[in-house]
Length: 140
Image (cartoon, rainbow, N blue to C red; front, side):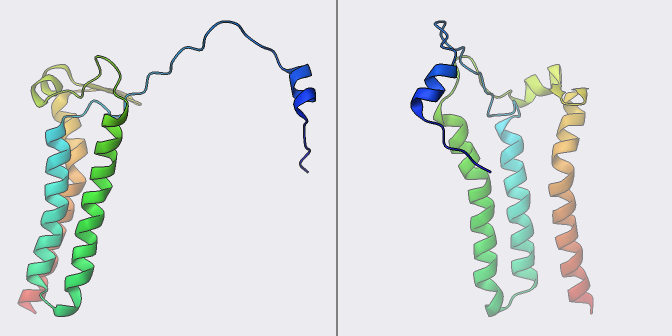
């Protein structure tokens, strides 16, 4: 059940602290290079392009356009989000820095090459899957 608390009751029980709150530092870029995000978007849009060209049908034009808009929005909105309130000194790594220093993940440190492979494996497989589907349709 819920219960309504009056301002007086809350003020009675609340502890007021005089020290200022520390600002929470949030890294919204995940430190990954912009080039990897651009490559991911390109591979996803390549998948839509392969299917659009390989399965040409007037009925698929609108769904393919909607998928492309969703992909662009799905990466564009977070890109805008990273620029809303940038913390001083926080920038994503460039590709050379990633390869040289690697990156810390939840499960431990990854070498740059391993991080790139981990990030790009799914978009590459999706594009290969699209090419395979179009090849199967073309051969049958």
